[in-house]
Length: 96
Length: 289
Image (tube, rainbow over all chains, first blue to last red; front, side, top):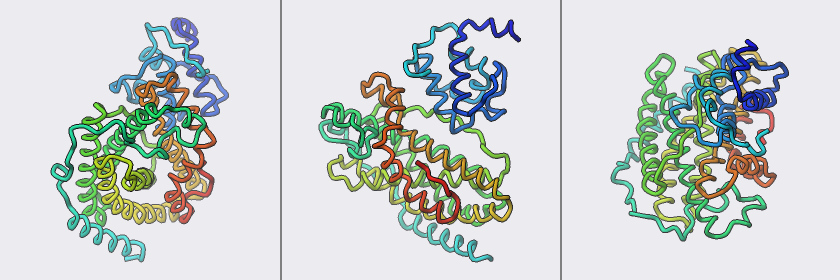
């Protein structure tokens, strides 16, 4: 698993997303890259809007309507690959 | 038939009669002007998301009018998406067992909501050039189907009462363009019946839950409704709208405005009817904001 984590070059994004979920849902344990965020109750439909806006802020652009669906937010890895892979994240002012 | 059910049945019959009596053709009802003057407000100042904060006074007249136009289109867009969601909830239950009593009225409800969605969308597309995207992703918060049903109708009631707060303010604001006032007035007139149904239905559904579930489960339901009210009110703070209004750092504006002390009183006023009702049924005991 560690090797797979290392494949993700943009650890900052992962860390920020993980920290956001941890702080919002008061999760003390580290959230693994492949943890089912919705199935495990780490994201629910009410929290999703704020999370989605946070992802937009981090990537520096709006999320296309076609990608606003649960499967695109299933795990940290999927979120990273869907919204950040191959692009530089925005500086996300005030988003830490 | 128990008293509550008999009462609901009487109310529904009356609401069906009223819907038939007051039916209208939305495609002929509105006289859409080619354009709306941009030198007059489209949204009442006190409904703007900057109102009550130190930043409101810093807006130039032009910025205030522009933001008001965009926030009105954002509000109507929010209605379009909300109506689609609530229609899906009602459609998924109409004529199923347990909804024998309400299905006749559901037909009127769906018919009227379809009209609302049409005229809100018309306004957005004609004068705003777009319908703002929704960021909602829905999945059920509870596994139990009767709790899901209760939550669905409680959410419908909350959304209708909050939207009605805006409608009532705008339909009576003579500084707004006539078409803006009319859209709000027509919506309000139908919504008063939907809210009447919602109050009775939510009351009955919650009575059923209290008879079946322990206190800790009811408090989980309360917790969800409290969070939903936050979520709903905060949905009016849309970064995409702020971006269109020319504001830099639109996400920061959303956070800053939601948390502004001056907005808390507004949030409470918007939710006051809903909270009063929910408290009267012990559905909500804690403070919302």
